[in-house]
Image (cartoon, rainbow, N blue to C red; front, side):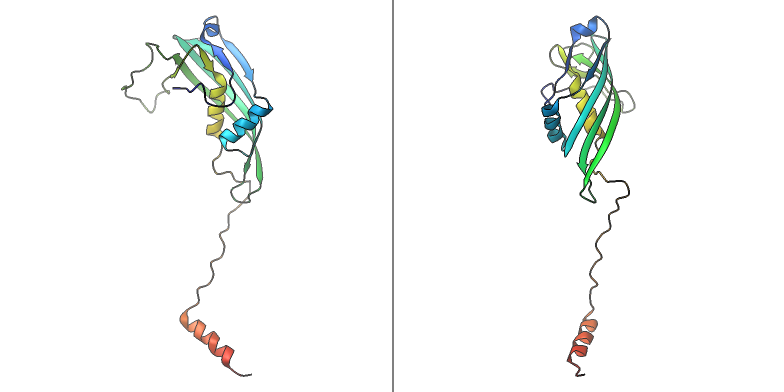
Length: 176
């Protein structure tokens, strides 16, 4: 079930709006919302985020088609330098009101090859910003690496054999 309270940014569409036909929205958070989302997503910075979402009627709920573009800054896991990236993504999902008779039963068998079951939404509003942020979170690389950055492990110290240590001690005692 979608959590309408999740996140610092909300943009909603009411089910009653969708009943009159498709709703298209271009959404983007402001500066303080970007900063809060950056913290929520574990980024160094979220410079921008723009979502385009089309919401159409589906059964007694809605179908969402969306795409997003985001400028994110993370720390490279190899060089520890800032890594700026442009992330884009598309998503498609369905939502139904929480009491809908069209929701699958809780004990229903889920086919992993089939489309995801619809989300249940509490109340009369669909938080489309939530879905943009959710899909952005899935697009973020958990182990960012700058192009060309290669991890080279430190060379292990050569372990001296007991005989090599004795040989060095013997050389140190020899008069010149």
